[in-house]
Length: 454
Ligand code: FHN
Image 1 (cartoon, rainbow, N blue to C red):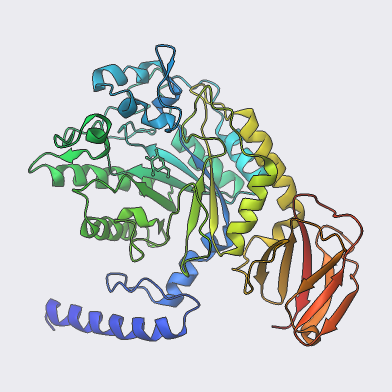
Image 2: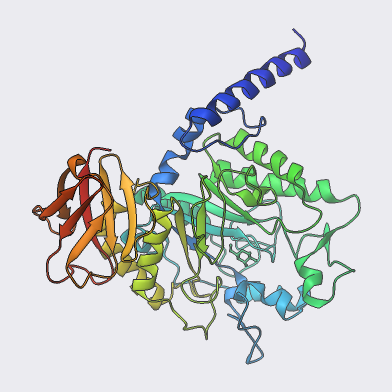
């Protein structure tokens, strides 16, 4: 049987099972014949990620040295510190010496992983190479990396990958297609100043050279660093196509069939990768497929010495709940200093989120999107047999109306009360009214659990 005939039969079988799946699956799998996995296989592969709901994003690199300031002047208060090379229009000769100044002697991989774990985070995604093209691990592909180009000479990504394994956290990396250092890329002549960098061009005839180097690095990361998630970025450059994304996605999957890849591997289309990536925002409703909001705790991804505009713990917890109520994941960012320290305001907020999840994790992890409209007083999340009412604003009349048929409800209790003593409820055909205690057990979010038969 010829290769062509074999692939046609394979393609035909894939196409027909895709049609069936879309009819049956909880959410339709990406309708891409390239992806030879069935909906069941995809659900199995994505399960840990969907159940995790909460991860740590880490933007760390030599841009943490200037920390958003150049010659005592703030470069751009509205843009991430990781963009300083572009925003200050620095030439490589002006920017790359920061590598020699980068010596994170206080970096402690176990401490970082513990901060993530104590925050209730289940996975971690760190910048292996951001737009500046500097590799934060010991790559053989370019000497512009932390082992060869800094006085630090150690490999923090290897240390983090190993620490994640020790603490049961899943390890992932961020990787940028846009690269201000790679010789195959060049500033875009038709764009002015910053945009020339943002929309960097590829030199004629040298695209494959860059793609080959990317693949060599991704092979290193996937095979030697146990990478289970890849967050691509910088895909907006015009020379990067959706087909390039498909090719790169297939390449990564050939190295690790279980890997989870974001939609920026392609052109942020639904069929690209495994999940959508809204940034610094939370969609009004879930898009009906896997998605993850990435967000900063202050106003920058990379560390900025002067940015103290920290979101409150209340805001962050309610954002996590809002995202989970729409069936999404929350990838919350930290920007460590050049010394290797995660800023204390970030650590404090993450610890407080961890305390809340210690008590209320059942209402977040492995839950799915709310089946009901968003109530004025909060949000809903659910899992089989349980509906979680997240009460942000405690009703003045201490009564909570929930649109579930009364005859289906077995018990209602407060998740924070270890005894789970039942609360009194009034049942009616289409709803129940719960009588709440006078004061909320938690001012940020008190979770009322409704045990019911769906
Ligand atoms: O330009 C990057 C930015 O530096 C940061 O990495 C974020 C995080 O998702 N992504 C890009 C902006 O969309």
